[in-house]
Length: 199
Image 1: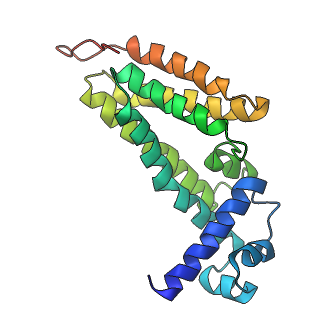
Image 2: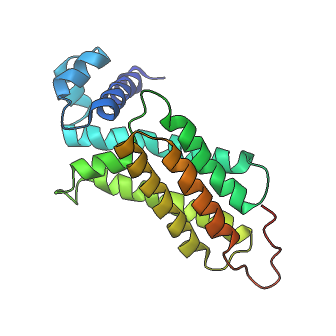
């Protein structure tokens, strides 16, 4: 890997750890530079502003998070109801880790609520939309009617569970939301000729 990319990656990794653990408002550029083992001048060579660094932090979480949820879905046995519930079960396991601090996309967006045009807010919206689009595709393949609407409803349950589990420090909110998602999927109509969900 080129040295330039290695340094930039190290800065993003350091920022990710600090921003996720403490929130973007409480972490200074100096703290990120120190954790990354670079000078502040070097950090600003790679990132013109803290805003750009915050956007890079979320961008780096985007694909890994989506791939993890897709993996839980694909690895679950049963029908679509079980596969959707498996995403919630996986997040419940993650939420029981002592370093878990909720959804980085939601937390960052909340901190930047007064700045709707912030690049990090746009990345957060893109991430949530990408999850809904991916899930809608899976539900369409499974033969469900209005798969986009069903995927959005599941995303509402997911983001609600993220919020409730963080507020209450209780991962069981994910499990309860997973049961609700399973019921939602199981009761959702399918296209004519579609096979019933055995899950």
